Image (cartoon, rainbow, N blue to C red):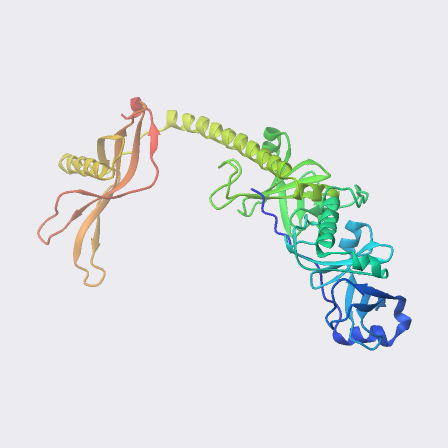
Length: 416
């Protein structure tokens, strides 16, 4: 199951002092033009001065009603510009995008709340249009602006706008969880490093699944699958699950890395492609689980053949008879499917137990075994503890105090 969490990457990088500097020092500016707005700005004016320039090496776009007025400043957004193949500016989740040679749109996505190049926009909390051409502004509507932005976001995700070449020679990978970020991943024959996590090659699983498998060794239930050096699947199993132990399901999640950012974008908007990765992980987990179960069955079969009952210890026919009755009572109480056929003591002597405060003797206990007949034709045994209460004069009947987890199967012919 894939969980992709997307967040906008817009940052406000200038303080108010920087805003003012833009207009007080025109040498920083590359161009200045008069623009008409579809909807009034913060000051209620429908006409603004738009200036492009730099501040401390950072490209900016500033808008204000006059040269001395407090401007709205938008900073150059590298990832969005790279995705759209044009200079995109933004601040606080608002994107300012060139519409044509003398116009811009400004939009703030609401749903999904993702950056440009990270998903297909659907709704907006803010949209506007400004142009040097008053007639364009006159004929523009919010619906046209928003539909244009939606179309641009869709074209980018489907690879119809930006077409950046993939660099196959380095260790940079784009992540489906953070589509605008670059992750450094190093791969060798024995190790894969993603961030601070190291994964070790599993030759056994790699041969079984036909894909290179690397596993994290610190009980994180994380694995990396590499079909080719350009793409990587990271998978994490839920609590109590793991590769070879369970089937890939709702508790599990994956991430996808690729050297080509466009492959990541296409995956984010392609449910069939996401489902295909899920199906692949289910298939791998099923094969690994069946393999482990076959291995376990073969090992268990060999152990069953060689297994024998634990040696007898303390012997007393009368007490052993009571132990058998106690064992049958326990089995009946807990609804065992097996039939109890014997019980005996493995401990060599009884251990006295007392009241922790007064030291008065309360009873005694001893280790033992409960032997059973199974419906599959085999026999088995449980390690158990038998005990007797002490009433000050003598010991009462033997009862089953408890059993150890785990049933040991053996051939019935090896009971004696």
